[in-house]
Amino acid sequence: MTMDFDNKVILVTGGTGSFGQKFIEVLLNRFRPRKVIVFSRDESKQFDMRQRPAFRDNGSLRYFIGDVRDVERLEMAFRDVDYVVHAAALKHVPVAEYNPFECIRTNVHGAENVVTAAIRTGVKHVIALSTDKAANPINLYGASKLASDKIFVAAKWLVGASNRPSFSVVRYGNVIGSRGSVVLHFKELIDEGATSLPITDPRMTRFWITLEQGVDFVLSCFGMMQGGEIFVPKIPSMRVVDVARTMAPNLATHVIGIRPGEKLHEVLITEEDARTTLQLPDRYVIRPMLYGEQRHYHADEKPLPEGFRYASDNNDEWLSASALQAVLPPSLSVSRRLVAE
Image 1 (spheres, helix red, strand yellow):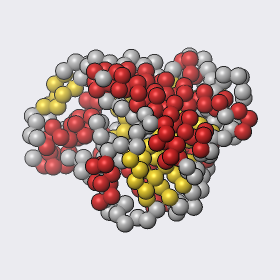
Image 2: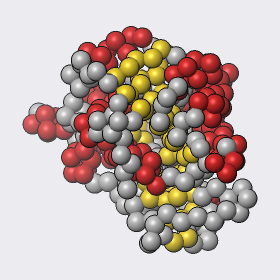
Image 3: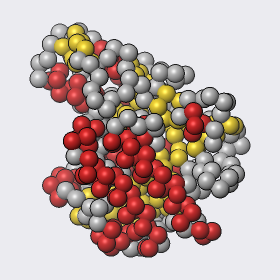
Image 4: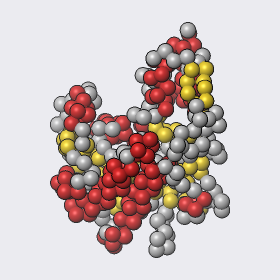
């Protein structure tokens, strides 16, 4: 069930990012919100966003310069806001490894500030975006997002019986075509005339989801959230080498080795998480079990079997080359040209 956002005020932290812009575009196309606040710290990206046809001359949009590290600025932005999507993050693994303090300030302290500001201003619902790297993390980015997840889950008990605001987390895998994605990297190399695409390991697998699918999932979670849970969509896996071959079937690949802080396969639900997770037809829900609270989400829900682990290498659903080609944005779909050559 999707919540009705008509005549509501919605704020998106990191609103100029790939997800933020797509979320706002979909929101404006499907609903008639009273106001949508784009909260981000880069005025150049806000200026560029204003020029896009999807947002140009839209009277319901507000552009708010601010940083999630600044709780006072967040409180000012959150006044009279109904719903918050927290998408702001420092997310590049190598950047986080080299700048650990900056990563912690944005991803962990920023999460605490969002929770604090939402409670103080009376926001109704907050959904925070997470990542597959937060499950059994081996790099600082993943560890910081795990800490962020824990903050939003624990926030349920900060608000007490009123359950307002309610806080939940959405955790999913690699977004096809988002800034920093390997798909975009491959496209740039192809456009530059590369004769071979770099592969860290031919066995490497990843979960894949499109921006619009991610937006749809977040919207659906607003209608289902009770507070403190982590929602995980059922999404397909694909080997990274197969992504490269789909985008450029006539190009060779070469192995460069796994980078520091990188996993061979990603995990969305660990064996430990599985003990408190419900399986629904289209998603999993990791329930908050700090005080043994029981809750239900769907008539067809069921617990997961002992030892269950939702990882990109043991997935029941795999993305075929044709399916990937079908969901690639037109600007990234290059195989037809290369095949013709």
